[in-house]
Length: 482
Image (spheres, rainbow, N blue to C red):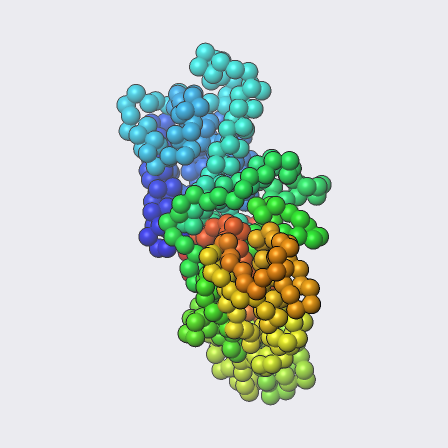
């Protein structure tokens, strides 16, 4: 999401609702300024609704906090006399309108903590339901509201690996916009809420494929562009051994480096599109050869940890291989016992069997690759022995055709042909941490129907070391992604 959309989102769903909280707090006899402080305003809501104070812990647990916030908001609305499902939906989905409206409405008054027995007895006619039914409805509504938000507007996502470092760190929690590229409608509707493909703890399948819907995407603000940081379903799970529905494949996050119809190549780790050099990722981490004066380097030394440099190998007592940003390399080079820091590339022509399409006649590797043409919807290509392996998976798996090679003849759905016209757009995705990323260089194109959304901003970031509160990276909170 661009800067303008990010500003709009923050204003609508963070700034304006805080103004509404402040107004409602004043109606309840609390200082209005408390409504503007994140987390603390949740504590005040807990107090005003009569919820147990330990609910504040739920505000800090990713994924759980979304349901907790919805539940707290519903309880707050009850405390101000809003008992209908219509009011709850308005307060959850359109808080930037209704919280302000009710905060300035003279007829809206604070009635007391809605979770106390006294409140429930006093307003039993308005509630008109048992405690168990009230809890059930609240939970069902919270799940439905969260599902609607997650499907059509925005979804939380956590960075599990270092493939995007230093742009995104392990432990970064993101919001991913579904609106930018258009929300993709569910293709496998019978599934357990918030579980991607397996059930938590027990590990069984979290969905049923008895009902399947075809791919359809609602209109969005923009198309996927080169340079966007994109979340998508991992296309290698479309067939054996997984055979997962598209929307139940694992979520991956990479940067788009090639758009439909582009010709892409990689020369000494630099991406070229249509013959033009693409900008290097601003926080990308190339590989470097580091030569010392004989001083032994410890991977855990403060010098390396402060620079977020990762040691990947050592060829002699004074020669090391590391992954780090170019800024970190420049800083390390100025250290007294470092003799040289040189960016390292796998040489052109060296064949890597793990690199797509794993064909010795195409001696490609992670640093020197291509050129390769990225398929575009409606584009017709001539098929021959030189590109059959490149486009075989796309034609067979992603576009559901029977593809055979009989001698020198290519058969698609039983008919001999030497051309193919693509049905959808495809993209080339790569991690910013180029030497520690399994991306399109390893498994090829990402189909358009696999696109989930555009990374928006980091709302929470934690380091695995230390306790939860002590491990929060405060400088990364609400940081935009570029």
